[in-house]
Image (cartoon, rainbow, N blue to C red):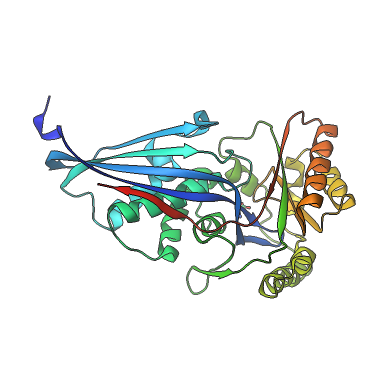
Length: 334
Ligand code: HSE
């Protein structure tokens, strides 16, 4: 055995947690993100010193439900891509006298449109920052977290990672460069989510982006702009009814709805039970309703599950939640 690779008994560990999220909120495709306190992922990175400097080895492990769906190759894994990019950009991996162990505890269901990959990416970016004491602002860490989305969506998108990183409602601006505007959320904002348990493609978000139109009619753009403005005004005024009024998408949702069994019925049932608005959560297939109280949320979630059942989905998970806070470091040890 090469003695240069022998570990010496000295290590530091940093753990970070990031919540689930929903993206788009109807008309805000790739622009709106909302952190959700439904689930959270925990990422722990351990840096172990070794005798001699060399290119660091990075060992990736996962635990939790559905981890067999997570690529173990570093450059195909959400968290792995974030680590690779950060080590490279901050020149950390040249002549390193350490190796890294990266462990993800997955609690967010994978592949259902609840920002599972984004939460792992956001927690990883924060844990790398904490481990190497980089002290980067969260808005820069969001950009690194977005690297991780390439693994599942085939491209960077910032809506889920910004919701997960900052918590609450976030608008992703892209001119002249990416930036993030966070707004507080109304106390009354509750969400009811129905997650249809069904087979989804491994790169589900990439598939759901593949069905989108390249060109859209001007009328649809005008309506979506009006609706997105209404959503933003609703958050600015902390008015849940106004937020819901704007949740209507004429561009992305119509081209994706065939991917969700029972889409129309789910919407109809939810509205009948008191939902103020219903939309696809991110790239789906989960559907999310906006409401003002927990009791109605429970009824609406059950009515959405019933609609999925009548549409051939035998198992649907229902979740009642509220907007979450942002990602945070929960443990650092020497
Ligand atoms: N804006 C992204 C999409 C979110 O809809 O493809 C994916 O969660």
